[in-house]
Length: 194
Image 1: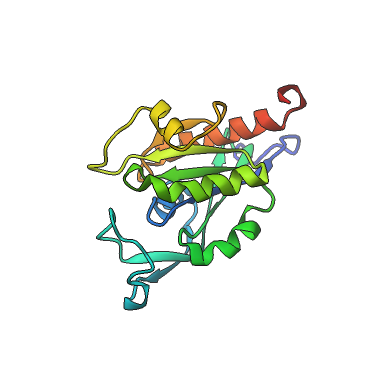
Image 2: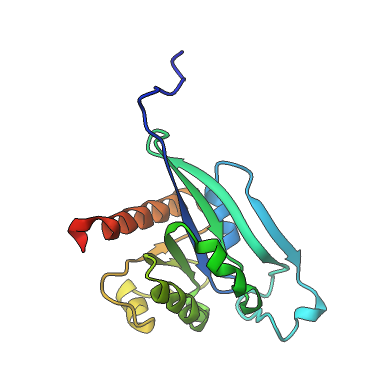
């Protein structure tokens, strides 16, 4: 059977976290790249969230993730499966982050440059846990564009943390970000890189 996987071919799987502030594009990213129907835990924004959820920069946003997003993508001729866990963006749901990152090899921090201040707490979270992460500047329509060195400086990032641009709506762009974090995390985990 030509399509059957060889019994000698090893399949590896790992967990990647997609994190960022409220409205940074996490749900969109997971949905764009997942090869399965993504699990979403979105709820409609209600009057109760007025004054709690800052809709500046995202006035058309009507839903929010209240637990997580989950997706899966297979890379490299079916020998690497990435399980994607998108975090909720609002501070009131951050108590779940420790559970969501458990077992992950790395994280993508989605950044909206129009609300860069929303990214500091996320960067601090991953730095404090020593989990490899990269910054993916989500290129929203109409948002200003900045060189990656300026974004790095604005976020006070060490020189080794990768900063890339991504369009969370585009499968290929999201896939390249996943490849970048997998490579970066694996390089950080190998003894030669320490």
